[in-house]
Length: 125
Image (cartoon, rainbow, N blue to C red; front, side):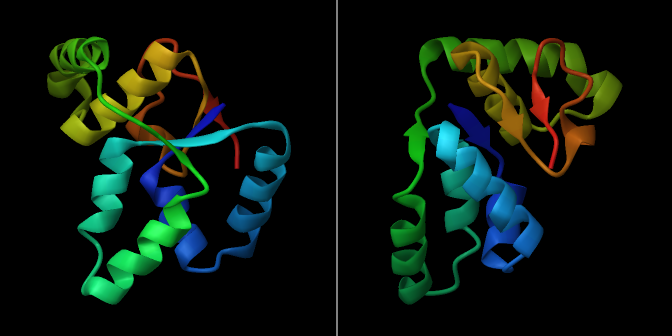
């Protein structure tokens, strides 16, 4: 399984051919997943009900990882460790905690948001 970050989904929506092909290749050998945080980030980008419906249809190809108690606790620990030193934001802490807890790699364009977090495996685009 591979956890997909919001910025990857945004680039797919923008019809970025390189990203689309890379995700298709990953999907051949891996189940693709997103955090519920990513789903919510995508939802707040919708401007009307038609976009909500289109997004719902698009997101059906991904498993959605819910925030468990252990993910919440790990996210909190990541904030304590990295907020002051690296400016780690709550959504990124929860996404990183999801990848860590499930022991799966994370596909993101913004590696700078995660590269300082111990043991988060970041995949190349």
